[in-house]
Length: 115
Length: 112
Image (cartoon, rainbow over all chains, first blue to last red; front, side, top):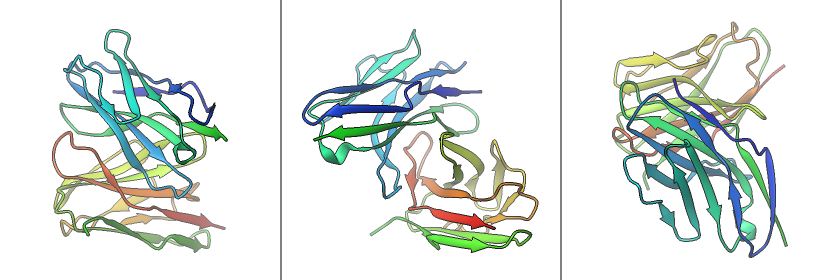
C-alpha cells in the first residue's frame, strides 16, 4: 500500500517570492510515479508536474520544480516567482507502476499568495 | 475539444434516496476513476475501471456502486447505504498505464 503525507495544511508566500511545499510518501515499490496537482477555487484538478522515480533528474515545468529525494522518500514542490494565480490547494500523489494503477493523494496544502 | 464531463454540477437529494452521478469522457481513455473529496482528507478512491465491463473497489467503496457498459461512461450511484454521502465527487480518466489523470469539474452532492 502507498501513503502520501503533506504536513503543511496551509502555506502563504509574498507575490514574486519562492515557496516550497513538502510531501513525503511511503511505498514498497521500486518503480513508481509522483505528481503534484493544483486545485484552484474552481475545483478543477490540474496537473502541475510529474516525476518518474527511476529518473534522478528533478522535473521542472517553467516556474515549478521538484526536489525528489528517493532515499528519503521526499518530493517537495518549489514555486518560483509566485503569482496570484498560483493560489490553490496543492495535492501530492503517487502511482505504483505495478499491479492496480491507483493514484494515492495526500491531504493537500492550501497556498495563499499575498499581494 | 476532448474532455471529461460530470453532471450535474450541484445535486440535492433527500436521505434514503439513491442518486446517480454522471461521468462521460471523449478522450478514448480506457481507465476511469471516481474520487470523493472531503475537507482535510484529500481525495479518496471509491471505484475504478481499467476496461469496459470490469471495475474494482477502491478504498471507500461501501455504499457506492458503478457500471462500465461503455468506454465513454462510468456512472456512480450513491446508495442509501452510504452513511455520509454529502461530499464533492470527482471523476477522472487515464489513457495508458502511468499516464496522468484527467479530471472532470466535479459534482457537489448534498443529502439532507
